[in-house]
Each structure stands twice: as C-alpha cells, then as structure tokens.
Image (cartoon, rainbow, N blue to C red; front, side, top):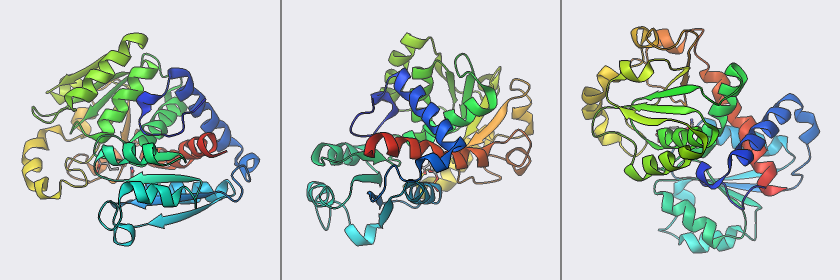
Length: 305
Ligand code: CP
Ligand code: NVA
C-alpha cells in the first residue's frame, strides 16, 4: 500500500492514511505482537537540526520492532558539503534498510529519495513535518473519534507543521483554519495543494488573520513556535508581530466547548501558549508526543518490512 518513501502526506490516499492510523492504534495496543517484525534491520537517522521527540521516538521505535538505529549529526556527515547527497544515499543504501532525515530544504529529502533505493522518511523539513501530522491525527482520533467534519484551528505561523496539518485535514475531511498574522501564512503552493485535495473530501481549508474568528467552533486548537528552527535571528521581531496570536485562556474560551489544545513541542511557554493552557485538562500535548512513537512505528513497518 505504502510508497517507497514517506516524504509528504499528500503522497498518500485517504485509505492509506487511515490504514496507517489503524495500524498505529493496533501496534499501540499490542506492541509485543510487533517485537520482531523488523528484526536485524537498521534505520539511519540524519539530523541537520536539533530534536528531542523525533530522535527518541525513531530510536526507541526501531528497537521495539527488533531493529537498530544509527544517528548521524551535522558534524559527522556534513550533508552536501563533506559529501554530496547522491553519494551519501549510494553509501547508506548498502549499509542500512531506511533513512530518516531532518533537514532544511525539502528538496534534500526529495533528492535523497530519488537517489536511494531504500525508503526515505521525512523527519521535518522547512516545508513539512508529516510524521508530526500523523501522530496528531492519531491523537485527535483517540480523543474525539471520527475525524471527518471536525474543525482544527492552527494559531500562529503558517509553517511546516501548519502545512502538514492542512494536507492531512484535506485528505481526511477535517476542516483546517490557519489563523496567522498577515504575511505569515502558509506557502501559497501548500495552500493551493490542500485546497485542491480538500475538494474530494469537503474539508474547508482557510486562512484568517483574527485568532478569535479562527477558533470559533473549533474542536482542536493547535499552535507551534513563532520562529522555527533556522529562523533564530527573527525571534525578537516575530514576538512583536505574533503576540496577539498567543493561545491563552481567553482564546480557548472562544473555541467549541470541550475543545482540546495541541502543540507539536517544543513549546515556548509564555509566548505562543500560556502555562495555564498547556498545563490544563484540555491539553493533550504529551499524549500527542507519545503518539509520535506509535505513528512512526506503523510507518517503519509499512516501509521496511
Ligand atoms: N515535535 C518534534 O518534532 O519535536 P522535536 O523537534 O524535538 O523532534
Ligand atoms: N515549526 C517547528 C517545529 C518543531 C518540531 C520548527 O520547524 O522548528
């Protein structure tokens, strides 16, 4: 069912995404049944940016499936500088059974997938974060049930995480509203893709510039850091632009009653979200973080078995 690679949610049909969520749910309930499905297989993990969740969940995940991981940091392989992407791919395909990459330009994972005969998994690029979106929709399904017709409002920067949430909502029939300052919306091409995909499912994909308008009737309020990895020099400028987009108690009160709070983490408490919200009973952020493990185990089984 799955393709060779897991690069963006858009590469998969609704049935394939729902199938992966179903497998993740089954694997979460009965992990012992999958303890040796990837026996002796190795995952290389290339990190050009920092990580807590992605690193730990892929590492623990592959071990729980009977395999091993090798972690490669920027100073070790210096992708594209010490050695070309092509040559790294051609080496690694003879040594490991799949590669997970976290990097800057999305083109790097696309090129790697083209050059390598083994599966490539996107562990975050500047453009998208599909593993995160898979774990997020698994979490929403656990808490809310049927995903179709729910409304998710992403409050903040129209970034990689926002893109992947739009792509997944569009495929699964979940309405996605991005509430962002003017000039900080999703990339026009990502918005266009999501809008096209949404025609098939009836999902409403929209961008608004008033957070209070955005969260109206929302079942899920989602936020992320205002400055992503690679935008460190913009931190202060962005604080000034985004401060009215903070998810606080007042904003949560305008969502549908029973709405949950989500964040891919790491969170900058006091900026995009207050302690009061992230530590409240409506917050599912740590369940969401745990689900990275289960969602990615399902992806690895499908690609590497
Ligand atoms: N959410 C997420 O991808 O976390 P890390 O950056 O810590 O991997
Ligand atoms: N948008 C964030 C997500 C981190 C998981 C970033 O790219 O830094």
